[in-house]
Each structure stands twice: as C-alpha cells, then as structure tokens.
Image 1: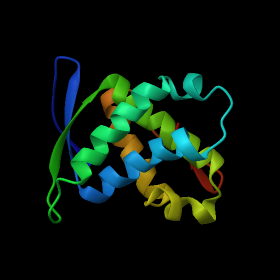
Image 2: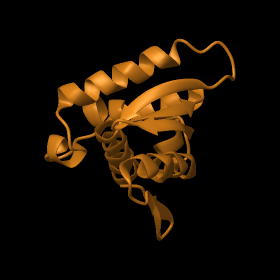
Image 3: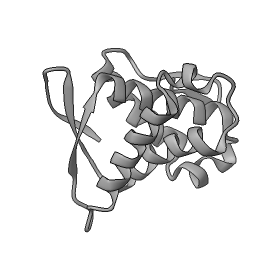
Length: 135
C-alpha cells in the first residue's frame, strides 16, 4: 500500500488485493467477531460508518483480476478508523490466530497502519514487547 496523491482532505492510496482483504477483515472482526466494550468509541466511528467502509473495500477487492494495484480514496477519518480497527484486532486476537483471521501478519498490518498514519498525520507504529502497537 502506498500513497498515490493527496488533496482536499482526501488521499488516494494504491493497494493490492491482499491488502484490501486484510483491511476489510480488520473491520469485519471488530464489527462481527470481537467483543469490545465501547466499540464505537474505540473505533472512532459508528458501526454503520465502519460497515460502509468495509463494504467499499470489499467492492474493490472483487474488482481485482490479478496482482495489479488499484486506487482507493480515503479520508482522514477513514484512515483513522482503519488504524483503530487494526489496533483492536492486535489487542484482541491471539497472535497465533491473527494471520488466519485477518489475512495478514501483525507485521504486515503494522506496515499498512504506518501508511495510514501518514494520511492521518501521525506516526503509526511502535514496538511493545513481542507484538506491535498499531493503534
């Protein structure tokens, strides 16, 4: 995942199909699998907003026909929501199950979060023991 262009409060990122799948799956886990107190507050968005973003990612996922990159338009709020969803997954999913459930390793998700952090305007990751804090 990389930033292609920025402007007017929106950013175009170029993503591969596997990145799109992992990002949508972090939202899916938060919305449907994980039991999180104050989910909306911790996600920074309503469940409906998260569902809309997840479905946008899934629509893009189904447009891929190979290993190409596709453009995806993200607002700062979208980027923040994806960062927080990734952080909640790291916090609540056992490390051994993480890649199976999310479709990417913790390190791969941390790399996505770092790019999202550039969109948001903050640094995205820092080491915390054996796992990465990606919130």
